[in-house]
Image 1 (tube, rainbow, N blue to C red):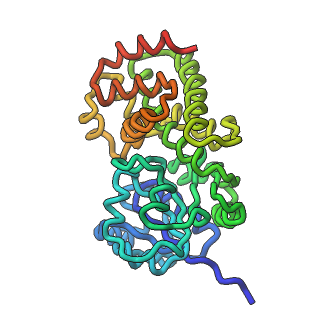
Image 2 (tube, one colour; image 1 turned 90 degrees about the vertical axis):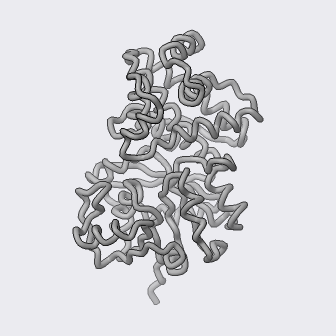
Image 3 (cartoon, rainbow, N blue to C red; image 1 turned 180 degrees about the vertical axis):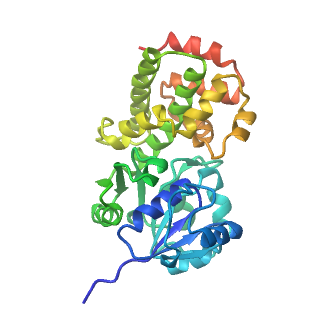
Length: 332
């Protein structure tokens, strides 16, 4: 008998959720897709594409079961791909009444849950009793915009169960997406948060007209800073030169598609945080991640001059030019 395929739900209606849907529909016949806004679903059904994000990607809507009810999506699905901005995750889950303990959770969220200062895997474990082996993390140098164009991309699936990681990776593998597996769930989650922070810092430098030489030194220091923090928080035999760490940092720091770099560039050019946020059409998760990692590091006391500098600019409203001149003297 043919093995029954797991039912898959996409949780979120943004650009990354749309990219994941495109990837999964290359190998799966159908998906469930939860979006909070009913009018977005109605427009999607009428136009055959997401009206707000990656609108160039055309979908066969006959292969998609849309719902604006989170409990319907959870009940119908076996695997839930969460792709909502981390600051809004709790808001989505407030309406949840269905049990998640028997579901497989795949976090595509590159952020931390504010207030609790928890990475996504820890949050689902603590508040929704999802077993460790049922939580996976999706990361890597993979911009949604390039997925939309069908450009070669690379993803890593991290899970404490290697078999489960391989199973999820097989769903995501196709002619333009190559997948890898890992068991460094915590390290990959933290590095995914931190690369957004450093991309903001890079953008600030770009906005201040610092050159490529300085930005290269900044990034080489950033990967060392990331390594120190990850080893302090979660000691693990990891190689930060792998694409899921270094590759993701590089593409987020340099790409024209990077919303965090764009946000930082505006700050460097003199925009206030509030004005820059209003100009952005999407969430720059690194803004929230900066505060979360800064507060977490109050416990670990890791030497993190780039994080500290970014925090001073974003949250203490210190002049970017003054902060960057001081940081430049600390880089090696």
